[in-house]
Length: 211
Ligand SMILES: Nc1ncnc2c1ncn2[C@@H]1O[C@H](COP(=O)(O)OP(=O)(O)O)[C@@H](O)[C@H]1O
Ligand SMILES: Nc1ccn([C@@H]2O[C@H](COP(=O)(O)O)[C@@H](O)[C@H]2O)c(=O)n1
Image 1 (cartoon, rainbow, N blue to C red):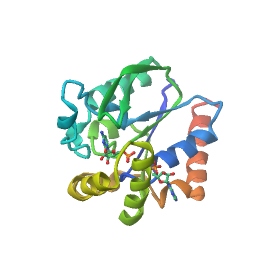
Image 2: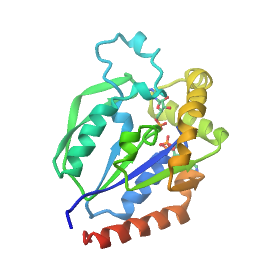
Image 3: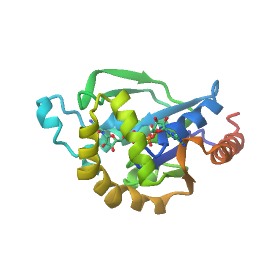
Image 4: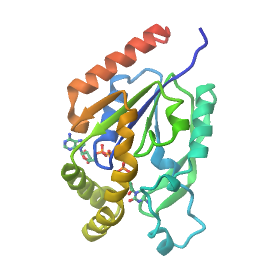
């Protein structure tokens, strides 16, 4: 059988717990051949725009992402070729100057708000997960995270949530739930769902004789 990496897509609204679920799965495979590819790192480069202009970008619209580059990189990883992954700076709203050279792995977890929105990405996935968390919890988690980790103010998070994040979630993210193989309620601390996923991935890897 031809050796081909397993691709797991993990999506859900901002603050739903995608990163936490992804990290929990990743941690269970420490020492094995596994990697995370973050769709956020593939936001379009905006270094040519002044900072004030970057603030006006709608970061929750599918067109904000350079999915062509993401797909190119994913296809290269599927051929077991290395990539130069971009690095994203949320405080500056653009890519940083550096890239990270990433070696190919047997399991690729592709995580991001709109990874199930693009049919080309869906077609490259073996398993699709949707992390489903109520909107009130998502905004509370996002507020706390964006102020602590992404250099935002309370007012800016609220304004962005009401003006853009919420409507784009309803228009573009929520409808992708129908493409999911598994819906994980409550996100990052759902140990039962995470254990089930880990077992499933182990089975796939054993079938492919990767383990
Ligand atoms: N089940 C949970 N209960 C409480 N806090 C959580 C839970 N899942 C995630 N968090 C926290 O919420 C914030 C957003 O979670 P994260 O995994 O980054 O979400 P996403 O990647 O979907 O935006 C983080 O600070 C994380 O620690
Ligand atoms: N410059 C940017 C880029 C993205 N965002 C927001 O990030 C959210 C996606 O990341 P999660 O980890 O929360 O899934 C998305 O909702 C964008 O609004 C931003 O604020 N600034």
